[in-house]
Amino acid sequence: MKKYALIILFLVKAATPLLSQSAPAVDENIPYLMTFGGNALTSWGDDDFCQIFFCAIPSSQTDPVYIRVYDPDTGGDLDEAKGEFNTIVNFSIYAGIGCWSDTAAQSIHPSGNFKSGYLLSSKSFGVDPKYDKKWYSFGPFNPSEGEFVEKLGGRVFKIIAQGISGDDGNVYKYFLSTSPVENIPVEGGNFFTYKYHFRLSDDQKSVCQIYPFVDDLTISIEVSNFDWDNDGVIRIFSVAKNGILCDVSGEDNWVYRKFPIVAEEKNSTIEIQFVKNQTLLVRNNNVVVAVRNQYGEALPFYVIPIGGVPVYSPKIRMK
Image (cartoon, rainbow, N blue to C red; front, side):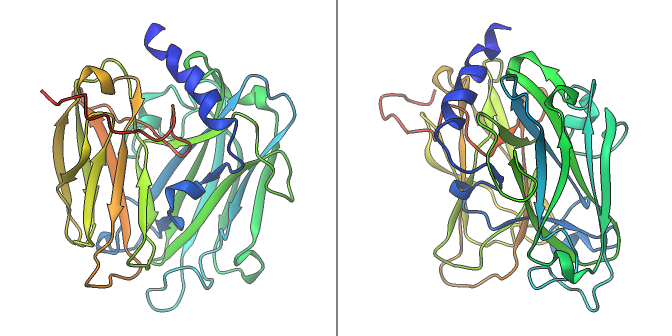
């Protein structure tokens, strides 16, 4: 358990002072998560029409929690229509043993037993104006129902957004709250995912960033992105990497780039930064990103970066 000792400490240090527990987090500068209907074309920016997120809740939390979804319907002002809106997206919450620890749940390909654990709650949303730009709350959930994960210092719940039918894009976001009607953060809580599906801002001056965590067994990482549409550049930052360029994808394809990990980067967060094209405006750009270690295992992206945002140290040199 030594390699995870810092994770528990960093979770507490990183999460406590922040006022927001949304996914995406405010500091990531990502407007929304996105999931397309199950009959959509992958060229619209969603490779598998399914997104899995986890909620880490500290053992100190004993009062009920709620997982809130903003704009869960599929036919509103924020969503991406492909003709007439016809899409159904299901949101489901899982807990219990295997909810997180089943390897299928952590895979970047939703297959096998990725709906592991037991189902707590589920609701499908189509075109429904009463949920347009409104919050829907799942819960209350007793924190003790989550799967206990010692290395995370608490309990874990899973939320899956899956496009059931239709071909439109549903954009939404989450909040982990102690209230069903307000966004009141769970102290020390965090969201994380192993494959990030998100919508970029249309603002060409916008820069967004996501934060994979690298443990002490990692000696190299493979950063992959899908359907970037050549919308600018992607850079990698860490204590040892100062904006190294990453290969970028075009339409409807994956690209992969490997990077070595030096000793100083282990048990720390890496920042992947997305800088939009300054000359050509790409609207409604939906992107999928994953990071895997040398064993092919996906690394987690925490919306509140473990240990804080990495700061480059020029004293550290790549080998």
